[in-house]
Length: 117
Length: 112
Image: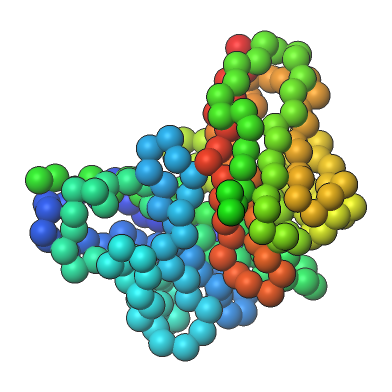
């Protein structure tokens, strides 16, 4: 079965330090991977995606993610965290089950990032 | 360009009542989706549509119905509200051939 796991419910980091939010996946075939961010009482905003090509993907707000096929991981990273990065982060994979690509997403359970001044 | 718009933003329903959550997009996207978000559970797909007149069930469709009479609109209907349907509901859309979805701001529904 296809799935996404975010092993940490919460990640705490000091402002200015590097941050990592972990994500592992299980899909058949080549994965389409995404990171979304949700600020309080808001919808989900797209951060970045991996479809093919370079394993290091750069996205919005200085975030990047590294695709590692052998470890089936897609960890979100940022070199220097900001207090304003505090939010709920979701990793997702395109649901490739069935004969057509319908754009359905399978989400991880989410990781709350707290950046302290 | 408003993107994906959901109404209402908040709603309290009594058990057994019915309501429709509205979703409209102005980007001419073919694909539309309804997800529900429960704490610690991520988002689960309720229903989706690949075009006007075509809908299909997602992972958690029980207790819900949808219709897609136009490209723009994808309403979600709750016929007999139950406490288990207390959740935050997100509508999303996706253009054919592109990969990332665009999400609405969500509807927070409480069933008491």
